[in-house]
Amino acid sequence: MPVSKEYIVKRLILLVLVVFGVLIITFVITRIIPAHPELLWAGSHPTKEQLEKARKQLRLDEPIYVQLYYYLVDFVKGNWGVSWRTKHPVLEDITTALPATLELVVVAFIIAIIMGIPLGALAALKRETWIDHIVRVVSVLGASVPVFWLALILQLVLSNWLGILPGAKRVDEYVVIETGFKPITGFILFDSLVQGNFAVFTNALKHIILPAFVLSMYPFGLSARMTRAVMSEVLNEQYTRSALAWGLPRRIVIYKYALKNALAPVIASLGLSFGYTIIGAFMVELVFVWPGLGLYAAMALLSYDYPAVIGCVIVVALIYSVINMVVDIIHSIIDPRVKL
Amino acid sequence: MIALEDLKTTFRLIRRNPVSLTGLVIVLAFFAVGVTAPYILPYPEDAWGEVYHLEKRFLPPSLEHPFGTDEMGRDVFSRVLLGARFSLIIAVGVVGLALLIGIPVGLIAGYLGGRIGTALMRVTDMFLAFPPLLLAIALAATLGRGLTNTIIALAISWWPWYARLVYVQVNSIKSLPYVDAAKIVGLSPLAIMFKHVLPNALTPVTVQAALDMGSAILEAAGLSFLGVGVKPPTPEWGLLVTEGWTSINVAWWISLFPGLAILVTVLGFNLLADALREASDPRLRRILLVSGRV
Image (cartoon, rainbow over all chains, first blue to last red; front, side, top):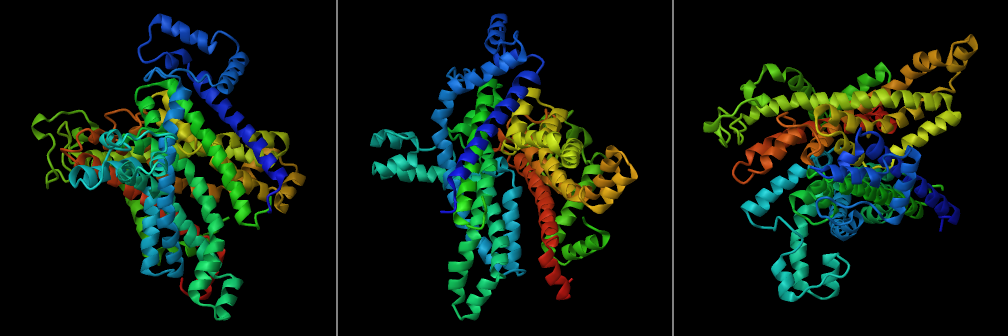
């Protein structure tokens, strides 16, 4: 195993620093940039008392470094404020909403990989032909389409007009009630499969297809382009040429040797696209009324629910940093050439 | 560093590939429409959003109104055309402001190095810890809606990329002999940095910045959709899509066409970026040049 303990420790320390950085920047954005931070935290039409209470809570009458100290302490303690819209503690809202988003993002990535890697490999094999051109345009389209617009149009056509797929929510209420389904982890697909509740499973699967497909566009485009680039490089390497010269069947050389070596950078690029995808989820969930973190964040933005907005920003930045770290470590495991 | 000779080869590479050429044409067309939009509007008042035509609400696309009319009876085509102007302002504003912050930071960090350099790059890294658009969302939520605030929010989440790029360039340039010569002659560090190092580090970052304009348009549209972008009645494309959302079941054209405008424009920028990336791949260049295909 090429990954050393020191490397992982180093990455963990780096992660702590990154989290600290994220908190500093959000502190500056929420407390220093606005002239009257209490206005943002006191809800949309605050009374004098509410404003006064917000000032106290934020310790705005104390020096900046005291404010920062309590900001960090509150963060660690989980006191992230109360959402003005739901009246719940922000952290509680976020943990309830998170599984729905993670499920959606995971399915989106599965779709992206299933479509992106074979198409990218195909384009590399047929370089500079019309197949290559089409794959190139389609994959660039994935990175160019406004996700919220695609979500609206596909929902309109496939759900509202043709009625092929459901266009809102994670699962139909009546199926849940009829079968007496009780979610445990919050991942409906997983829970229903484990409990052998296929009625709920198929229903939830139908619901997830549209939003996940829309969300998969960006990682799909990226993985297809990356696969194409790396595959065309690998196919030109000495070892693939020698393998072909040895008389190994082309199919084996491509799928067993070339593709395998092309995978590491593709996985790395998918990891990088995670950040963009989860922001895409803000918009896609809003369109498909998907009760996840994205919908929560989008609703918070639209209703000026500032504590909830900042809570979501911090959580997403944290998830992003952790994913980046994990991807780096995985990358180094599958590609021994990456020196740590 | 891209020399003139390289640019010529690059252009030839783009021209012989139909897909890359499409990208170039789209980008040029976008600039043309963006600049001339206010003068070529079929219904100028509709575009600026100052009117209300009760009798013309929700008209489907026709010869008179190629993209139909919206819930206030305004011509969607005019609004989309003028939207190009606002998208251009946003794109140039975001990229320009980001360069204005990113270039000095990268230059100073790269040239001076040492503690100042490390500190500057650590701050840059802190910004890069946010996924794209997230920081802009937080900033826009704090600053409030509006064209200027949208540009500021996006630029502040954007400059670290350019700082990084310039930093790397400057780092490799500063050890070149000509810089040493300038030092020996006794030029001040500032003069060397801005007059002699910066010009040579500029090409890659400006090319990158020009191509990033597509992403700026896309992200500004996203901010509008989330309610923290430009204010109505500004005909920004993302806002136009959002405004059509409530009536999408009766009038799909209100949302469809502005979204298509975003898609096509961003596609153009990305295809061009893709073409330049391919063209700057030295191995590919050599193969194509040797085989006489360029």
